[in-house]
Image (cartoon, rainbow, N blue to C red; front, side, top):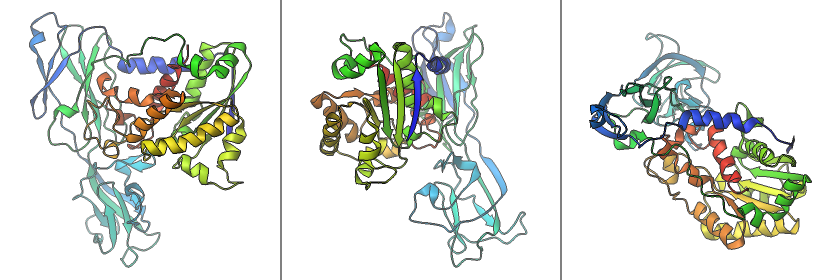
Length: 451
């Protein structure tokens, strides 16, 4: 459990607001329309163009390119066919995505494992000497094969990184393509030139053979459409004790409780970039006299059920580490609860609510971010405003039925496509670990509750 004190107003949040704005903001005007004009051609129609270019301009998009890796050197662990794809064996460096790999980037027919560099070295056989998960790009030796423990082998293969290209309009009205940097995970939209207007992005998620509509991300809105502030604000109705302490300057202890997204040890600037740090910093700005203590209790790879099952004395025992922290306000984030159905949410979260009420703590539930599309039953990353997960529906129902504050980050993730961003480009591990921009969406949802 970590504790950080935030006294008075902090200015950190402004930095990320500026950074996010640099990516999403464009001058006011009607949205451009992107249409397919060929396998690798996109017609861009900009209704704001003052001349004949408004009928459309065709851009040639460079296809994704193979990257060839020769003689990558490493010993191989034993292949574990029962493990998750990214942990079955050695992670090939070319497709590595932080602590995981990005599936689908490796050319499955290209992998060759040899005893050393060069074509003259002994070639090992897949299924006899080693095995591989050719989707996730992991390789391991087999116990009865020729590859010995701690023996360095040579791996050659090719893969196709991801890329996010920008479509911009120059000051002369001409439409331009700005090519993004190829990456194995979390490709960033490239900067546009001075005076250029970003019209959208084109997403190349790996080895595709042609563009489709699902790869086109014109900017339809420059930011999430914040609803008008109601009076009283949700926090004034649902978090009265918290509001009183914020306004009076009495000490307020906030407990951020969650899984690896709350722990966020994968972030380079964890202490300032994770969602709870951004939230508390902005809360301090909004209420300058506030004295806020932030405590984090997080357990990667686990969920609320894991906490409830831990025995006394465990590092993550629920009664000792959550209730025992004696928080005034609990903010929970559990994407790892996403397997719960609405009825299970009612049962599990009903118990939590009763416990929190008994210790006098108020509660904000964060809805989870979007995770890799196939884990959500999605086949694309655009036109996905509504979260399909029963867990999210259950959280919304539970919060409404029990007058619990709900910070609906899921709705913000569901609209990223409208802002020109495929949401999975915010995931540093290509699965479910959002970067600092993604963390800001949680803080945005939390701040929406406060006056």
